[in-house]
Length: 447
Ligand SMILES: Cc1ncc(COP(=O)(O)O)c(C=O)c1O
Picture (spheres, protein in one colour):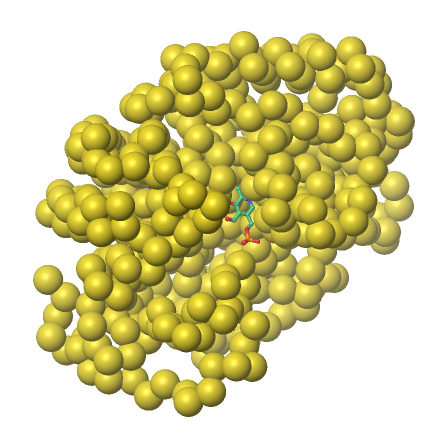
């Protein structure tokens, strides 16, 4: 249970108008705000002090739970020690320390880290590195980028170009030129109610061969996929799909990028999902869990050969003309180091692996409730598809998310007509029971 000390009131401004809330129906929110004032471990507290169970680890990011003391202390100490150091031409010790720690966790020769501040920046950084890599090696014709239908890679122009969620793309013009898409790996007819990676669908990786035949390998720079497509509604990779994609990329000299903004740092029971699937991509993007959501940070892990390809030319000239004012910000690095310590000390990745069967069993117990069309889960994630109300796509899931917060003291997420749960990795089995019992009540309430 949440501590009683957390139940204090916080003042709320009278006027909510000025703030344009991202990816949110603003008018509905401002009519009945879902406000969170404080957090600790598995719980949020509303401004009135009501405890709400966090079923989504913030937005797939507070993997170590909320406001953990060692992370808070590290951020406070760093704020007093070094507020900022220039990210270009200068640096600070914790940036190097964190890069080494991240590289040590990564599989294979993924051993260099480029830091940025978000998943979107990580994706655009990885795409730019892919293009530049081929360029510096004399293969400048390799400019095409291949994403996947239903993929989510953030909101930069690169990310929405390779992304495959139509609402994120349709209002924003022609996007990047020369982008193509693999088909989605999801097929309800063949995969409904699969636990973990579905048996059906490895062959969909072969669509990359068709794309290569269409454009020729000499024009293709990179393929980017999420090992588990999260934001679109939890679509685990079919068994064998990712190794097959790796083999086709190798055959044609195409770089393979895993977007692990969600899947890194324990969500699928490993430091990186690449480890779960036994595949070493050429780059991994990460964000969110690196600081357990406490300070914005993202990054790109690259294989040694990619970094080395750039290390040429005059010693006084930058090898890559790319970076952000806040790349490797001191507060983010301090938070990242404390977070990685906590993951290790509390064995949180292993804990996620151990909880996975219990979690999957609880998620699948919702099968048979009204309107439930499919349930998917892998690692500590669950996506529950529910049927739309006639003529109101997305409304039933939105109502479920809203009622869960206001009436059942639970945060879940709605993506289209999918309810998503992705809890902090510190949750107990009692928390799992509570989460799914409440989710079941909500699903019945919106039937
Ligand atoms: C796979 C993936 N890539 C990129 C992003 C974008 O991250 P951010 O919102 O930090 O820019 C997300 C966010 O959920 C994501 O899930």
